[in-house]
Image (cartoon, rainbow, N blue to C red; front, side, top):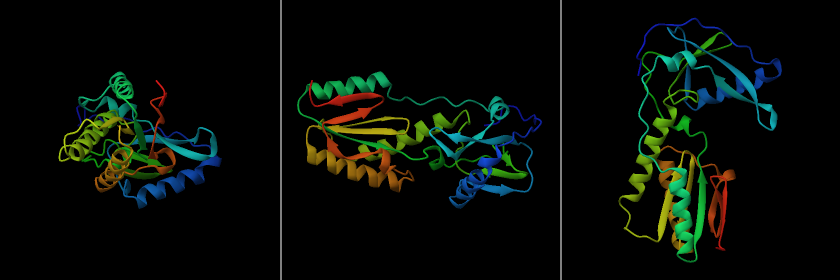
Length: 230
């Protein structure tokens, strides 16, 4: 993971006073979930600050400056993954082959579901004088997308592999978005239920507010709206 062990100078970045209580609450939640833990000392420290969430000015988003840490980390190769074009072409092809039904699942806090081993503490951060280490993947880390794609590929593969080979149901994934599509409404519904259980067992969290668990012939995926009409 660490290609260059040279430390860097820590320079704190202040958070607006109005957001500091929200940041403290967010850190407490991350500690409770086991994503981070307090540390008494650290060779490496990255600055963090809070910014308002888009459209939610009273809620804070934690941002960590990993410029120096990312420069010192070996990059991981991205695993083979479905491209946006592949996914959209696959959905279009299934639409052409007859009546179809689909569901969509959105994963909540995807990176926080991926455990990491950071023995050097290269991802450690400092918040208001308190140091924290990450036990799960932090957003902003250069290898987070590769780790997430590898983990999700493994999860979907372990779900699909033991199931009967059939062309009636297809599953596409892109980062934290999943679509299940088929020609049989009942099969699509059952597959969605089974996949949600499998995701939960593998440590992922489905966001019900952003998911569509009931089969429909009209979905929006990757910014494109698909309807039953060709």
